[in-house]
Image (cartoon, rainbow, N blue to C red; front, side, top):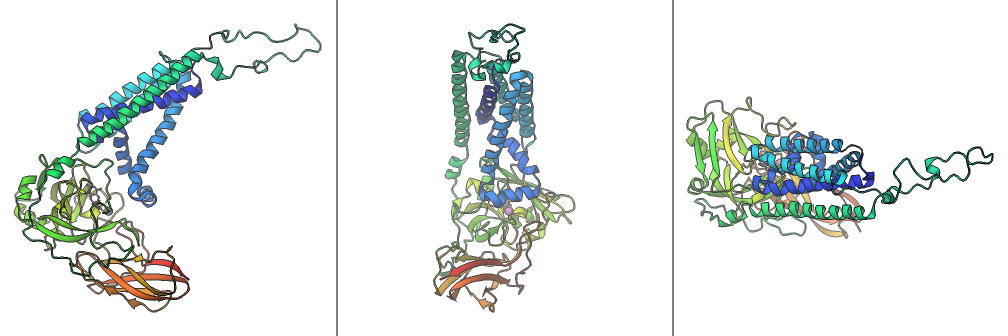
Length: 544
Ligand SMILES: Nc1nc2c(c(=O)[nH]1)N[C@H]1C(S)=C(S)[C@@H](COP(=O)(O)O)O[C@H]1N2
Ligand SMILES: [Mo]
């Protein structure tokens, strides 16, 4: 048993864990950010947490769900490490076993991630080694707290009882508690305490430098320089011009073309994959007659088309903002499929990302003439790294989870019967056509409105079918037809507006769209699982 007290044991445990994580991050500079234990274990958590919990995280934290996961993991880890530190005071072996277990967890997570190799075990192994060393140093090594130099050895506390045995008026026999026992803190030597605390500070500082420095270095080894160096070819088939008036430019209304910076981001990647365009290859294989492999240069040498396409996420709630419109530059997937000659019955094309994520797209949707692209450009720039640099898929009319593979490195022809893509075993539908939807962007529920004319406006979408009509309803009044702004094509959303003569009071505003096939969006409320939310976007506003 150590002289270190439980309180100091907790500190030792947390410091050991911090050193382990920091060292692991530093080692991961060599082996890649996905081999760092927090990220590796976090990745396994992302892939395995039950769907409702994941949806909850997306609902609560939105695009910050990953940061929340990392912070939550760090807090949990600190709590467990503190507890292990306390237990180590009694038995160091318990603490060391805990460190070993965490190390093993990190190793297991790192080496089982897609594309991992044996070297990915290193960060967790080295980190755990350092963590164990630090714990030992604090509990039983050079940093251990020494006992109070002048206190007698335990069990031989000086007697403070005033009288000898047999006195009639004696107080009860002195229990140890009757002795003003020195507080645990005071039982230790102040000199060693100083050493302990200095050690803690130095080690925590070192851990922070190693950890954040490692992250920073790893970031510098990213592909942003390679991305800047990419020169996009001019499109053989440029995008049609955005018609005047497509963007109503109203405050609060999403712009017709989303900026790259503001574009929603959804993926399972805890660290953004850094794919070097030099070594990038796309393999198109599986049930095909002529499998091919393309380099980035091969791809850029092909005739490019440029198209506006609105991407939407299946996890977008009614009224949500997981949708964006951009001008994409890329190679038609149709042409590539013609070259590889898919076999009869190969009804699914599986897009596979460098990080192992997959989506399954109907082969028919990629060959029916729509502008399905292997995109390299977004709004005139190379793809931003978090949006799939160097190459991603973009397919008009299908939710992202079945079609929009970022950091794509493989297209595999198979069948829906033979393969389930990433989200399918997690409860989502294998087929994900985008549902007709509409959204009120302005006014917002908290706006202060005054009676008189109020511009009600928003967006509506039914990609690859097109929007025919948008209607707005105030309370239980009849539906009113909104004005549709012009749009580039059926593959993008459309802005709509309607002038409302607002009257004082609290009102309910609702919107519904009808697609070009004549089908009006249903008011039946359905959750996002398994194939996209339905229902009318409804807001309540107060007019004075
Ligand atoms: N590699 C990879 N690609 C992916 C995903 C992913 O998790 N990993 N998510 C998909 C989903 S669910 C959507 S909605 C779109 C979002 O694309 P964006 O982040 O560029 O908006 O990417 C798709 N492509
Ligand atoms: Mo999505």
